[in-house]
Image 1 (cartoon, rainbow over the protein chains, first blue to last red):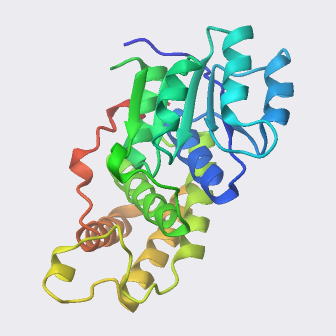
Image 2 (image 1 turned 180 degrees about the horizontal axis):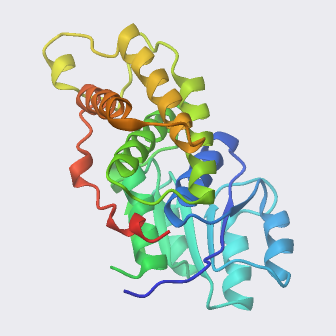
Length: 126
Length: 139
């Protein structure tokens, strides 16, 4: 079993109730603080800094800088970071592949999907 | 690329009702994880309290209509998501907050927590045995 110790996760979503749930579930899973941002630009400023995050979970559709641009920037500058794109639009799945996202999280998703993500990328069981 | 979540044909934007449903399921998982002795660390306590607060806020009577819950009782024409259901949801929230805040539990409180979680699982047809939560042992 491979484990990312002291994993840092960032969640980017302009929808507060949705973001709150994802943060809550992931914080519970990993028992670590989970950073959250309501827009991509703030997330990008943070991710460029020294602290950064190992895993970024971003919504696709957000005003100004969307999730695609955010993940493209991250993958260009930090290819080792794990990027997960969330969307309720089937058309966005192919775009997620094109920008190099590591996973696509199709809305609406379940608690189990978030557990599986942690098992896949943090615990390394899948 | 990995893929998680809804099937392509079921994809749509998440609504408040969906968030209430998944938060409630998370709360149930939290209850069983506690009862089964999984470790509750510092950030898990924060997550327990926040989730309990949000579920309690959302536990208003939805008039028996929550689209994602298709229960045995509903299919038989009974309405299970009634006033009692939402009071039990609120009770579960209080119980989980109590766990997180370190309130003394003991045999009877544990039993009450399990009974309440079992009732809610039955009402929403949530089979928590399908969830693999072994990884929660790592805290």
